[in-house]
Structure formats: structure tokens, C-alpha cells
Amino acid sequence: MGPLFLAASKTGLVALEFGARLPGQQTIRQDPQDLRAGGKGVRFEESADAMQAYVRELEEYFAGSRRAFTFGLDLRGTEFQVACWQALVAIPYGETRSYGDIARAVERPQGFRAVGMANNRNPIAIVVPCHRVIASDGTLCGYGGGLDIKRKLLELEGALSGTLAA
Image 1 (tube, rainbow, N blue to C red):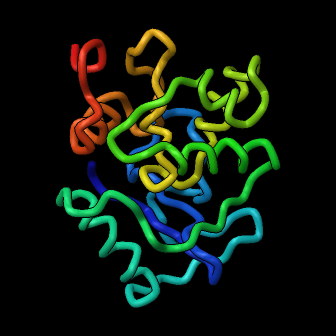
Image 2: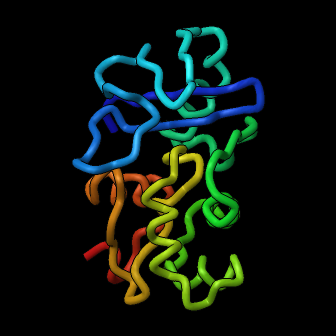
């Protein structure tokens, strides 16, 4: 997966970003190369101790021994974005949903494009599993970390089959 950037508040995980960002991709960091950079009134302090529980659960996930995260989340976005992100968290490990499925889950059945934009702005990759959202025809599409990483995450979870594996 490469390097990951994690940020947490007293409430829970605020961000989990891939070290490499695609052009135009959202970030809470002003300069992705400077982990101490602030922005939007955010002040970062490095603390390995404060991040220990998050790192441990992520390591367990990548080792294949964790299917659900138990730490808190501090979801920051519009009401619609937060609803979409909560719907993503509800997707079981090893399963996928379409953008249309998520739109229906948040009671905006015609809002699949808006769901796509909310996924694009998801600040907590992997834990808020937008990698589990696929196109309505069953193919992989759009992922902030790139389709190769999306495929690897779905392979790790055993969610690739049929069209997805092609």
C-alpha cells in the first residue's frame, strides 16, 4: 500500500490517507510531504503513542486477522457526506456495493453521482471502506489510492470474483 498518513482527534480517527496522492485528490495536509503541516485550523502533533491502537488494528487488517475496526471515528464533512461514509462503514468485510446501493441506503436513490463525490472526499481510506464500492455493472472504478490498491484491498478481503477479478 505504501506509506499511510494517519491523524486522530480525541474523538477518533480523522484521516487515513495514502502517502502518494492523485492530482486533485482531497487532503487534510497542505503539503503531503510534510506530516507536520497544518491547514484549515488544524494543528498536527506527532505522537506514536496516540496512534498506537490505530496502527495495531491496521497491521492486523493487512495481516488478514482483522475484519472490523474497533476504534472511534471523527467524521468531518457535510451531513450528506457523513451519511454516505456511515453507509460505507456498514458494508460487511468481503462484500461490495454499487454507488446506487449506497444512494438508496442514504435515501437519495437518484444520487449515485453525489455518492461518488462523497466517496472521493472520504478522508479515512480503508477504515471507511470506499474501496468496497464498485460500478453497477460489477467492475472496479474510481479509487483515491488507484485501482491497483483497490484491487489489492478487495483481494485481501476475498471480495474479488467474476467480473471484478477480470
